[in-house]
Image (cartoon, rainbow, N blue to C red):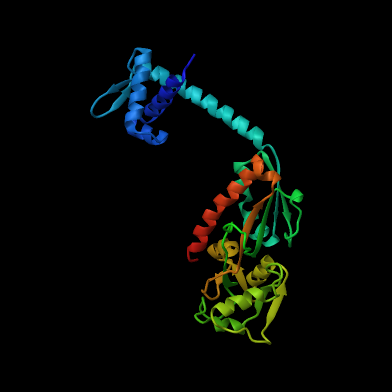
Length: 307
């Protein structure tokens, strides 16, 4: 029977054998080098033979050490395989994500390949909804909405910024335009329902107001009920859309869109992720949540790079 002391010694021995270094083994185990050395010495004492040849310049496995290292490595591989099998069993099944369409089409769908490669056992069901307010929790595991902050909110899942974008061929002037008021010479493309209760020109009005500019009546304006439609219209050369930076960063990087005027204004609305009560102990829902949160780090890095 292998007792706890031997298990500890075998774990330390394994990492020392892998790296041939007590210091690097200690880093792997988040303990001191002295602790690793002591555990290996206790294991050698128990076995009655040295496992390493120690010199001032290098560390080598003895013949007995090589034999034990092979057995321990096989054991770790078997344990790892068993853990992966158990984890896959726990993750096998479906998870439901309700999210606004613009986020689904512009942000989520291009990244789904990464999710399916990481979690092939999970069947992801995506429900794109224009409005998530009032949707019953029983209809989803996770819900992601773009909305104004509430008093009881935690930090946003993803902070959003507003930035005018257009087709590379849309404007005759060198881009980006230096003066924001120059945008008023071109059709403005709107998401007419950016958040619950918003006026149909709310985002553009907000963006101009933050720069101290009024939006005059009689401008050429075109309205769409979704942000992704306004962005597609901009890409087709129909005007200038107010892009949400997290959603258009990939298109800016690829050159499908260009910055029309480089004034990035923090949006009054952000993305909020809600986990239903029943899903808070659901391993599949938690895996999806953690994956989404990990993706935001990449999004922030892309958005912060000036395309």
